Image (cartoon, one colour):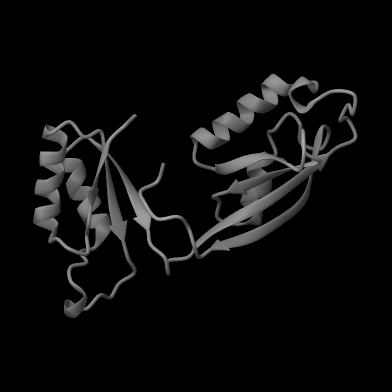
Length: 176
């Protein structure tokens, strides 16, 4: 289990956030989270330093990794990708026994490690009829470019739908 420290940019000035980060590292915390908001912000609402500048400052005073947390009301735009069983799908075998599974799994793991794939997996009972991916990319062209190198693309799996998805609601708390 990793423990992180949450920096509340709504409650503290930049200098206080930097001091808190240093103390968190000294106390053994392994990561930092920081809230971000759209600007402008008014004095009656409390603090709201420009978070990107604070993140730059954090890199000077600590070597802990920093993750931003987006709050309700700040839309996130991702892409939903539905992939269907393609012409090379062997219906006599489960998903993980399809030809080229290790190569496909390694490719998808690399996309997840790079932050391109946010979530992914089969949809439906058992092995699922389709697979659903959530991608964090700029546009639909980037979706297709990201998946082009998948050894299963166009053969074992085909892309049947790509749709932009605006996330307006998510569970509270720092990212997992």
